Image (cartoon, rainbow over all chains, first blue to last red; front, side, top):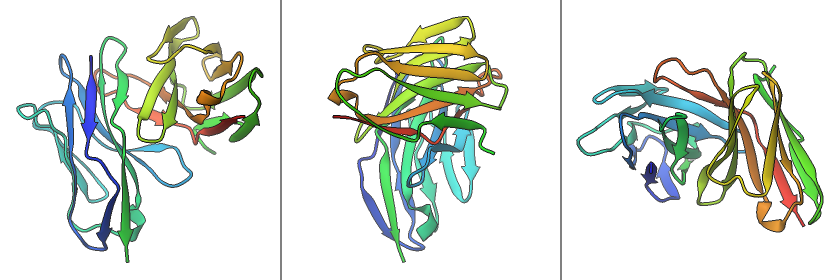
Length: 112
Length: 114
């Protein structure tokens, strides 16, 4: 079945540091890949997505590239801000029902 | 106004009680989902529905049931709550367009079973 393995947290960075959160997946067929973000006390929000190999999703300074050869979709940001503190989930959409399979989430804390 | 709403936002109940969590959406989407979130486990799919007449079990459906009362409403029931059902529950909707399906989540219901 489908699965997503995500970098374990928590991750603590200083403001303006470079961020990478690793995500690898196992899936049959051609899944779509997503990063969702969960701010404290809120539901999940779509951060970015990519639907085919070599696509790059980007939003709010975050980027991730769909790498089929390494089955990866790592999240990066060049300069994090305190407001980026949240839990980040990698997910894939696959199977006949196109349901989402989530990674375990990575807690990011950015210190001023 | 929020596109996906959940009620209640917080609920405390006792073992053996029946409870219902409700989800409503104004996005006009056909597909609706119920997930639970546990620390360190991400989100796991409980049930999903592709339209009013379609209900499907997800990864962890035991102990739960659902009702799709209308396109906009999808309720989750715990027939006899037990402590290991303590979790954060999310409803989501989607409108599949090819393979670019994106799910939109409600704010969640925090459930504590004593």
